[in-house]
Image (cartoon, rainbow, N blue to C red; front, side):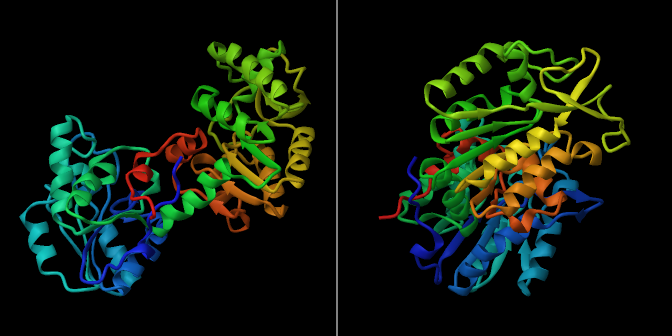
Length: 411
């Protein structure tokens, strides 16, 4: 995986039109942004290009846009938020065509240091490059608006979409730079290099519901890490693969052989594969998810047939915390249990606390684990919290991400 990419520090933006693909896929409620984390994460790159005298053209998708363009998924609220944060009007191009006459005229009128925001790229309907010709046409129109291109949308970098990867081909053809922004560079530095060149001992922690979601991640990490810790719903498939009764716990029966293979692989490669030794059980899943629930803790080998495992137990939490203590690099993706419920969050809290207290480089791989450390108040104690769920997982799988691969390699 080539990770030495050209960044915004490697070229001069002065007087240049620079198209920046951001991740402004923010949550909206009644037209108001409820979490500005992704907007804040984009600011360092935007400010750098403005300070250099670039003409900064921002683009992003928002939502899934299943039924065509609609004002509920317009990027107008993002433009207002950016204007307030940058102390300068960010001109919003509301045209549903994204790259039409309004965008062209606005770009032509830009002065150095100006910022405009294009409409939701998915309003165009061809963002996902299906059919390819239509995606290419959109990518070319985006490239026609700019001289250089910067990808700073790690959360979308695993998609070969027109505004993520397709555009680079046309920018490069006319001699422009294709670089990554500060946010992308941080993800590459932490997440990419943690897996490719970790400081050892390297401990990886995987949780979440299904084995199927993390098949390739488990396989890849067993080759890279020294210790692999398994928690969450996926642990029960491993326990069942060992012949244990798991009651009504979540299980992926089609993946039992795979789990056996992975346990064999760990043994053959001299890697530690840690599984729960005790489990927090209840009669059923909490309803509502954060409602009161009666639980007890039993050995992982003794889950009653009428009970369901919903979190790791206290002994397991201690064992996992101990494994983290001597680590130099820790990557964590996926909670240890139903962390949305206070009674069932104890395992996830224990793991988060052990990461917060270690001197190791601690990397949280996006998605639910990022939500968990934020919600539980440990975010500021982590070295890096990834901004991409699916992209983080694909990085951990060892896959090449289109948005990263499409950037120029540093000379």
